[in-house]
Image (cartoon, rainbow, N blue to C red; front, side):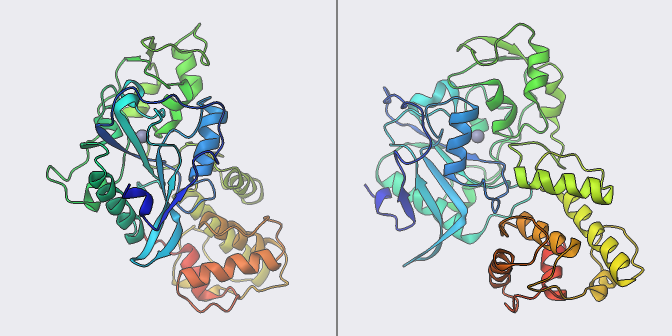
Amino acid sequence: MNFTNLPQLVDMRGKLESKGTYSKRTKSITHRVWHHSLTLKNLGGSDAASFAKYHVLTLGWPGCGYTFVIEPKNIINTPNGKRARIVYANDINKRTYHVGNSNQFSLGICVAGDYRYDKMDDATLASIGELHAALVKDGIGKYDKAHNEMPGYSWKACCEYNYRDAFDWKGSKKTAKPAPAPDVYTIQEGDTLWSIAHKDGAGGVQVEDLIKANPGIDPTKLKIGQKINFGNAKDVIVQPDPKEETVSGDEVVKSIQKTLNSRYNAGLIVDGFNGPKTKSALIKSLQTELNKQFNKKLVVDGKWGAKTNAAIVTVQKGAKGNLTWILQAALYTEGFNPGSLDAIFGKATESALYKFQKAKKITADKKVGKATFTELFASKK
Ligand SMILES: [Zn+2]
């Protein structure tokens, strides 16, 4: 097998969360189906282990729904250069759940990330391209499809990245825009109200909406072929709110949002999703603290500008208090976990900061001054 020889591939078959096993395929693989996770790529939960947990513990599936998961946050140095790690999660002969009635003949590949906000990086593109080339050489699958190009799923907003950029693609480079959601949806293999509501981030659609639209159904016992109503969820699926939405919701981000609300009246929806509103609220909290503690007289507008930058004071090891908390929260939302958000600048915060400075190629002095705050808060997208 060519794919098992990829230096960035790690075999985690049998090592991820599971409950029972998927059955063997009864058809050979004809389709390679590309998915995304709609979790920001640098967040803690953006990896195969977390997806497996979600699929088993929340969706009730036997294991991770994908055969391969490409993890942009885990970069591996290979002889060919930097590559995003590829987790081999399930044996290719196992019929995992990811495209319902097409599971038998479809291989599921998930690229972690939320590409409405994340940018696809070169290491990830290279891993997609190399995995694709290896699978082609191995004769695994004939066609490449996005999730929403598979029967019954045209309304899915998956995938929101262009996997076609990563390899030689003969057809149109444009990914299919999600079609309007149907009034009635026919349940396919592996579908649960949770997977329909959340898995591919049909923006803001809640399981509660689906339950409301389908009184009397048991959300844990859906049968293949059963029809369910989309109800109120429908409009939201057609026009996903590109702002802050619940997908699987990061618990630490939720706690950050709660604190921003209670301490700074931020008025955020506590959804665990780190979007532009949360970032803006963090900048406001910083401006508020600079005014309060250092009499800076900044306009508290949540925007990163020259005046805020000029007002920055240096924060370093040993510091305590709200500025340290803001720093910890900002590091976490950028994907650099400072351990706990305890408002104490200790070893774990320093180490997260050091990694952040290294990653951003700014002076790694373990002190937080103008350059670091700019990297944390100036918008780059
Ligand atoms: Zn998908």
